[in-house]
Length: 517
Image: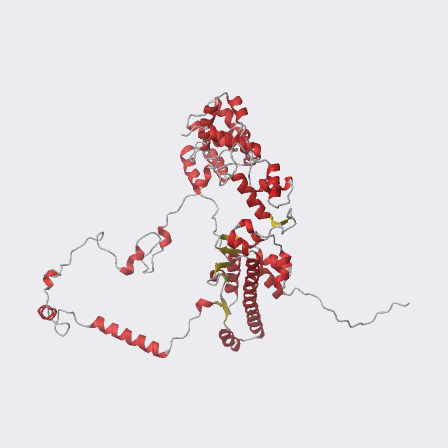
């Protein structure tokens, strides 16, 4: 069979990721904050896009005429004569006779004389308030209110001020500034001193000497490399770092495990003294730098609001503040495209128009998809909204996708970084998707989050004399209709940051034996 070139015509279907489709997918998985930033960039780049609130409707002619008449009347009132002159409201005696009153009961007989003021006493005019305060130049513009806000110093600024007073050598100051740059938000220096000395080309003794100076700064404990060193610095300043307390600080892992028997043996103290030492240890600050703040904590802005209607049904609606409103200025496009000089300008305007139309459609499609997914989640998790976490149903992406006729990947993008405000609090949409745990009696499966809630409830209700082991928790859950393994209970307990039964028994016993302060 000879191999010869030939032309074939075939018809097939394929999914092509167009730029518009990629844009819609990208917008779907953005959070409300990221979406606002994205839309803001598009507003700056596309001259045909504008915010909805920026469009001002034309004022009717009658309203303009009425406003003009009011302005004229106001101007005429300002130019009229004074009340006390003829042709105005009348003289003082005429006004008193007409109103049947005596102005002496209200106003002083003579008008106040102009008091000569010094420049320091003379109040500024209304238009001159901008000349008061920092950063003003008497331009008549409004004052910058941000200039009056107190600037909260950072931890680095606070330490640099103390360093300028503590050391005088240029070399020591350079080493100190570098060490201060390495102090994290908690107040610790995590990098080894040896690598710092090698990078600076200084001796290890010089770097350690400057570090010891920094460790004397406020806040107490700053510049430490470990938690034990941080606590030791604070105890030395309080003159409480005796041998017993030193042994306690050097064995913090035993403190975490609540192994009080070993601690009493190592510290050489009795039970009452150990309780006092532990109480003093709790009064120390393990993170001395957090008093100066750190990264700005952004509050969660919900995308969906769920509330109970008058008929008892749940109402699901999108939060208006989380939806950017943009419009395509078709009138501006028609006006500009007529005066375009060359094909390049017309092509640019056409591309801007297409981009603007696709953006508005993508935003509208994003809002409809979020609302559709959220509505189905509320329908599936109605028991959670009414009764709480114990009635949270197991749910996966396929269930929601099949119910609303979408793909699982679309549901996954919708639920990413989106939050729902419910009468029980604000939850991420992914919170409602939990694994299922089989029922022991063959009934409906249980949600993993609901099982975690039951484990926490049982542990919170236990007494010091009856601390529940993982096997006991498994038995109680099985009696309650939950088929679960012991290792699963241990995994859920660790995810809830609940210590083991041995550690809980030690903690509860110690708390019961400590006398009230």
